[in-house]
Image (cartoon, rainbow, N blue to C red):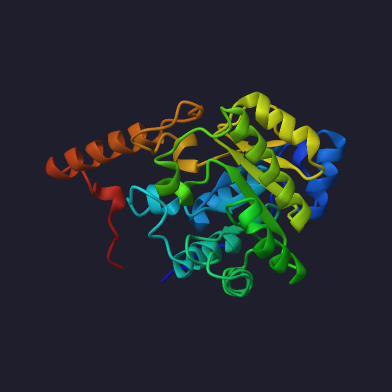
Length: 285
């Protein structure tokens, strides 16, 4: 049986992307220089290798795999073992991008000790170089404990998908003055706890810009406008593999339609006896 060839180093990316391994420290320098940061989700070796070679700065093994890979309506059923498995696949492919393992619901909410144990597993077993968890003020203690274990932590405030039941759905956060104050307080708590970056999701663009200006750590926006230090998209939305995409998403490809076309053509060729043809057959010695 043939083995998967090791991924090549990302030597063909644009000159602006040529640098050594992306780290929490190098991202802080990027913010100081005003350079934008690109992050995508990834869940397997093949796409991770493609995105890494393309010069994407961070690859997030998101608990969004519950939606786009497993077919759930929410991220809540995803387990830590599942994230570790997918993180291992992504880490195996990367030579430049910083690999961030998402901490799923239930892996850090019970206690900060649980949070540290979960983060350590993501690093030791999954190969993550950083972890991400949702929540601001309420997650500050867990963030601080993980950071003290020398594991870089990315925060996530605003619309937090693991809080879907409390929020009553995927609702934009920060539209009222009270919500704006809370979002800013959450972001500042994440920074003070020792996070190296924070995702700002589902909030008005002016609020995300204000938060970005007030924080010294990079902000990564998703549905939060252009004022953030960087942007992240779910790869299935980016590539046109999702049945439905949010209004803030730009589809950069329509791989879903292309895959359907290829599958139909394959089915027709099989039915018509056109595949396999002679050139696809092994010859006797």
